[in-house]
Length: 219
Image (cartoon, rainbow, N blue to C red):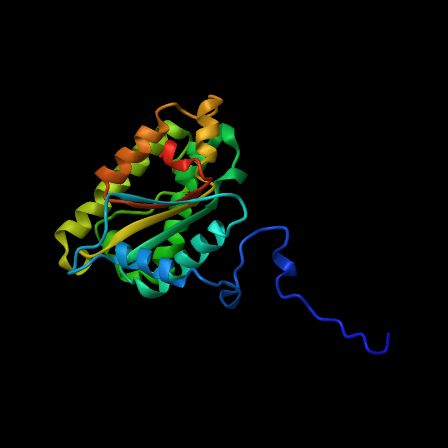
């Protein structure tokens, strides 16, 4: 017993799964993350728009961790990308899923603009474009209208003001395949995926979504 020395296992905190936030504990994903970041930033002054990037695989293979670090590196290394990380959507109430989506989007957008894109926020305010709040989104139908109106104003700004022409918005969503289950059970509008693809294309958004290994059949 005198010769026994306890060895701490640095991985024990993650045995029950969950996001590994310590970058030093993440191995073998750096090249992949960097490739996604380069894609989002684009080349020759043309940022990526109108795309959904899907990361999928079996449970507990580190997908959520990759998404977390991808979001952080996008903020650090792509200064013209507004990163909206909405987290794990499986924790949202299914009955008000779409309303929650818009409310969280605007909440995170307001925080992100205030923290990392003050000039862009001020340019929107100069045009009398305010970030909607949760009070502006009563239900899914109103949420779609409010979201569409705001994105029209946002895109008008980046099209007309050269100072912001290289900006894009990336929306990060974890457990995206839960939407498929909600659709099958009739818990969200049946046209939601069609709508998601439409807004990604029409408003020039980048979606980065994580889900289970059957996601290619769904997305």
